[in-house]
Amino acid sequence: MSEDLYPRLTTVFANVFDDDDIVITPELTANDVDEWDSLKHIRLIIAIEQEFGLKFATSEVNDFKNVGELVDVIAAKTSG
Image 1 (tube, rainbow, N blue to C red):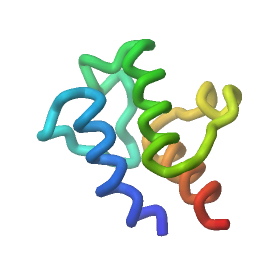
Image 2: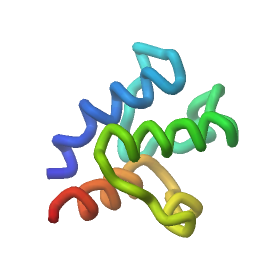
Image 3: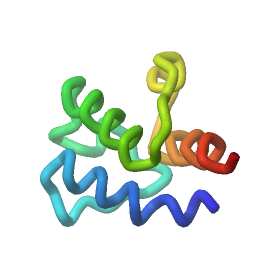
């Protein structure tokens, strides 16, 4: 199921970072994207919440180490 989330997540990342060529992998971190600063992080989280119709707790947002962990939480929240 989590693999199905990557195309939607790629669209969100492309919109937030204004980069249609961005490649989302489970290992991707903020350090890998030059434009990924604290403001873009907030915009990204809000955009993801809107795209997937969910809400992250502050503790969850602070605990994400990479995109793979983010996808795992999205999958858990959207699976029912």
